[in-house]
Length: 319
Ligand code: TXA
Ligand code: MG
Image (cartoon, rainbow, N blue to C red; front, top):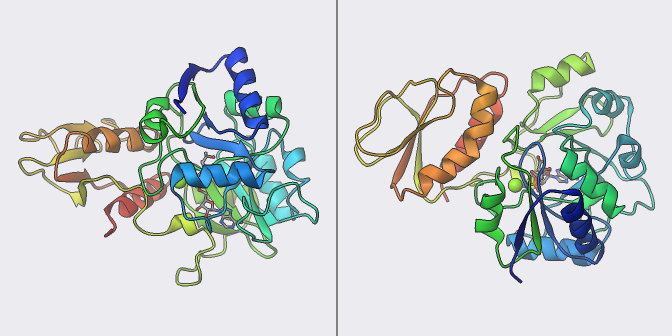
């Protein structure tokens, strides 16, 4: 099946919704990254998502809804979940909550868990697509498993061409980093994956600290394992200078002029929002030069820098 790259318009959204209703897959723009969307209610559609990504089937998916009211029909929200939903939805926050008995979300999308990851995206095309489909959409990031997340429609085409029906093109993703994932399972909310909303903002909305995310316990966000987001090149983090032949991922001009390789600056003015939006596209572009190594400048470990550093460390993890 050859994927069709269609500019997102009311007509192409309606067409994509019809594909989804019949169990097909669509590349869906969101404010974070492009998603590979299929019916969350259909085990067959979710199986097709796993197959297209080449993703291990034990990895549960996020269900995307058009509104918090619809999300609350499938997941049981405690007071903390509601507080977060009110503060950040629609937007780049995913809430993990216990399922409601009789939920429409299929077992495969949940990977058999009694909890469910829910998100209401703010991207107008995503919400229009969910509404037109009339069902929640399961959507992992639209990359082949283990590869860099897609922030442009062309990234989706280059990873999944031949494996999906339609990619809706709505230009580059504004945030460029996946949603922050928080578990609300009774007791203090717990951060499962740093992402587009800094944890300080979550704590401000909650009026309390998040529970420390304990490493070492069985991964409940399996996608949050090492060696994710991997470019083909090796990554050298916290670089202060760049050697000949290395490609360079700069921040705030710290690396200066490089000798021979391509240098891309995530944000010449040192803005972490801008850096987040550019991160995955620049990693792909640097990787495409064929350099052996990508040298990355140090990113401050605060605000969005926490999630950026998380993705860089995964890109650098042994594989
Ligand atoms: O921004 C995003 O979140 C993007 C866009 C497309 O919405 N989606 C995304 O999905 O990043 P994905 O599949 O690449 O990452 C989802 C993460 C995985 O780490 C998965 O293990 C975790 O969510 N997850 C899903 N359901 C879970 C659950 N019930 N409990 C804990 N973690 C869960
Ligand atoms: Mg992903």
